[in-house]
Length: 239
Ligand SMILES: [Zn+2]
View 1: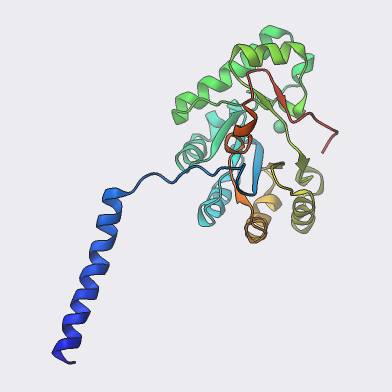
View 2: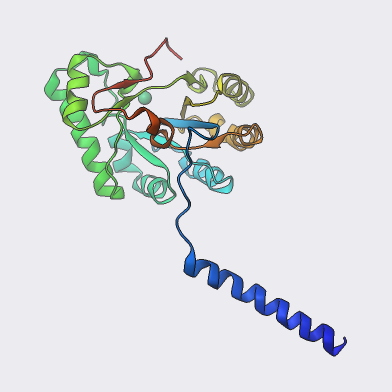
């Protein structure tokens, strides 16, 4: 090896070694995606943390995709490690009640209790307080919106569903999800459905290849400036 080449190699190695250090010294957190400027979609997973949340989180991490988990308090209590990981890895945590009752069958006090117990356990386990409520079955009435207002929570439903709970079939879940995916869509899925978690690498890759940024609900709806008790989007049927 010539002396000249060795010197050049040393220089290149030094530059490579230095680059990460100087980059990290000046690194800023990545800017939040602006969904008024780029194509966004929000994948949402209800009723968890579900049994398969670990594999789902691995996939989301691998593809640098963010999601929103509407959690049940009872499962945050029984699977705290998953809830912590969701928060630590940049996903959004929403309130989906403690034990999944139909809020429209409950008295106001019982609705408040379901919301409060879930806010409390999520805060206690993850350090993060949910900013959004998705009532079980997407059903809300006046006492529900009043309770949501009291806790400072907009109510977020979905634009379309994967029908994963109904089909429990990997190919069908992928087909349905990609069919209903659209810009600014909010897709309903479940991390207790194994086939959903199995289909996720392919779904995420396909959405990203179509130009979507996979973002949290709060990032997606920022432009709408929702207020506590608002319901978004207005539901148009059962999916
Ligand atoms: Zn649910």
